[in-house]
Length: 54
Image 1: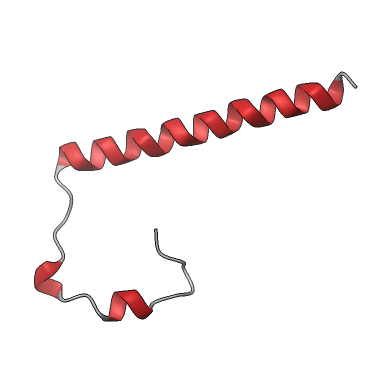
Image 2: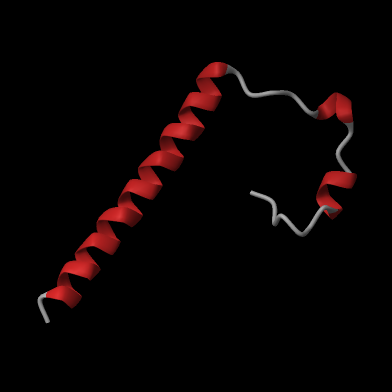
């Protein structure tokens, strides 16, 4: 993922080399991102529980 403040990489991309993801690729990326966030949520809930029980 690009840093939102760093557009230097974007300037070097040629339009003909940019292709949208296929539906299968998009679904796989979204599912991976969702899974990563779910893991982060579980970790934070565990940490919150540890703090609350301390």
